View 1 (cartoon, helix red, strand yellow):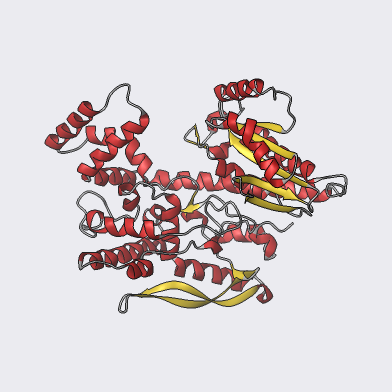
View 2: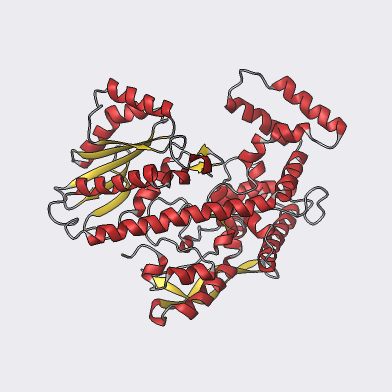
Length: 486
């Protein structure tokens, strides 16, 4: 079965592991990200130099921005980068084509340069400079943006890293010398230069490997959500007595007991805007606890390997050994259901649920569920498509074998506020738009209360015994190893 890099390029997974590279899927992006803090805090000199090179580029942009207005063309040339799709990582739910870093990111970074990077090299609180500062100032700049930007700025390293592996372990017939755009920056002329590499090549494009020890599955170690969450703690421990009194007085005056979480976040954001020095003390704390970042990323990447690679590979072997699985007796609905049941079993009975937890708390995103399901679709005679839109909104997945055999699959979280509406109305809309009556609704719940909510909705809709609705128990509190959830 051809799912992973090792499959397509006939390389033993152990060799990749020994080299330190993640065995990526070449079916779909995996939700893994490059965290620049792991470069900063690494004991490997080559990683520290990579981080220094990122900071050098930002200092260059800062100096340019302070010298005058930057036009749209310059923003595109210096700030905008495509996703490095050849890494096969990120949040694309179909293949490996993400959106990359657009004009909104370019303007956000440019706007923030003088404000947050003005003291590069002269930090008085933190031990060093950090790219992630931009995501602390600007809401909406997340780990995918930071990862994409980092990947582009260290692309030369990633190409060299992959080329060394390819030339040693991959047959020449599976490699190709290609010109890679925007690999190294010429500071004399202010332009990005291409460079040629001998790289693994498949389906009209090259492939890049990434070292596991610079990857993370969760948010970057330095991130806005964590800053907001720790805002009160930082304010209460601020070293300057006078400023500390001002910060706490503002919070006491502004925060109310019955205030919603959304309004509290606005209060914290306004405080940070007024006192950006809070950011420096937040980052210093993250630097001082950097060893935890390494431990966390290592554990989460290992768990991702165990599920995305080992368990899915086992499933592939099981399906391929069942010679009647793809016989004419299996229509698209049966095939879709078999793969849903596999995921259900792995999550409920084989610790797969742990992928959805961080520090004991559930990370609930429908996109994660969809990626997992996408990975189970291999060696199929069916046409499998994600986010199919026939004019009435996108359905998560459509599986078809000609015009007479089509099935739809929708993934929903139990906490979804529109769950009842979706089950009652939207699924039928999708059926009508795709001219089929075959559909599965897969609902994930993370607590007993969520389960009860789903049961009540199904009862109200008279769907308690509907076999097209499959519930998946992603709870941690009822699993034998729940206490070890990461």
